[in-house]
Image 1 (spheres, rainbow, N blue to C red):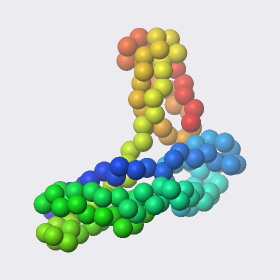
Image 2: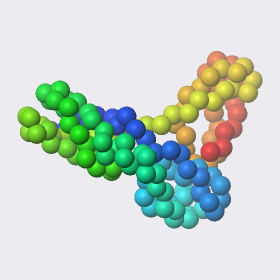
Image 3: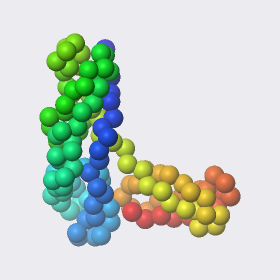
Image 4: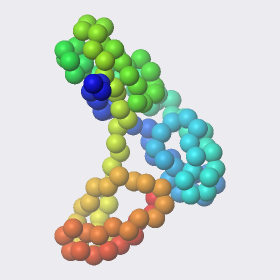
Length: 129
C-alpha cells in the first residue's frame, strides 16, 4: 500500500535562467534549464525556512506533524500513530488572460513556449515562460 500524499502549502518562487532568460523548472537546488541545458543553483532561504517549519496534519490520525526538512517530496512518519505519509511539492499555477476575450485562465507554467486555446472563445494564442 502506498502512503497517502499531503500537498505542501509553500512553493519556491519561479526563477529565470541567467543564460537564456526563460523560466527554470520549479524547485530548489541544482536545476537544469530545459531549453539551454545550463545548470543553475536556485536557493531561497525564506522558502527553505517555511518548508522546514511547515506543520501538516497526519492523514491517519490528524495529529499535527512538523516537516523538519526543506526538501519536497519527503516521506514522514507520525510520532503519534506511526503512520507513514508523503508531503509533496505544491503545484504552482499562474493566472493569464485570453488576449481576445480577456477571460482569466489558470495554468501550470512550464519552461518555453506553449500554445493555448481559450475555452470560452476558442481563440488560439501563445505564452512564453
